[in-house]
Length: 245
Image (cartoon, rainbow, N blue to C red):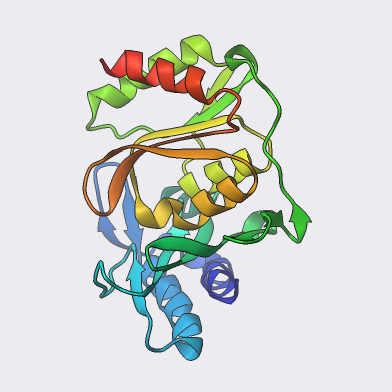
């Protein structure tokens, strides 16, 4: 929680610097604040656990055999942040012996701190979270993202728009999963998403009752991910698998 708050608060405190770009990509951007916020999170972690290993979106040294690994996305939704939109967050998780054991997602402009542990409930600002009870695809909101270099993403998006009540793209995977955990959406799908985007929020969603399933691993850090409130899971999975065939 302290590490997520440190990263998010630094971004918020320096909101007027959100245009300081150090790398511009075709459909993304890297900011100087991405680096600074990751350093803020890393400092908070290393004060307490200097021997633990660290993986961040902006780099870090770790091994797959690490007993304790901290996984950080300093600003998830950087493009949103750079445009002044409020849908961005800082995400911090810790994995022990291969299992996620704690996670925090802090959305400063929304004043929301989502948290969970492997043995405890999912919370937002200390209040319990639970997934929705919607059981029909035509009454469900599905959250997703599109990788523009993957034609399959567009095909899947079209299939989802035909079956779900609504499909939304908010631009922050961690917040998408937290919205699922909060019962404000019923499904989430990404054809390619990275570990730092989902490490904390995936645990939060699971502890709120969501079903989180890796459909395919692209490599050690990226996967194809499906998550839902459980009640629409098989129907949502069927749409995705049919469209992918």
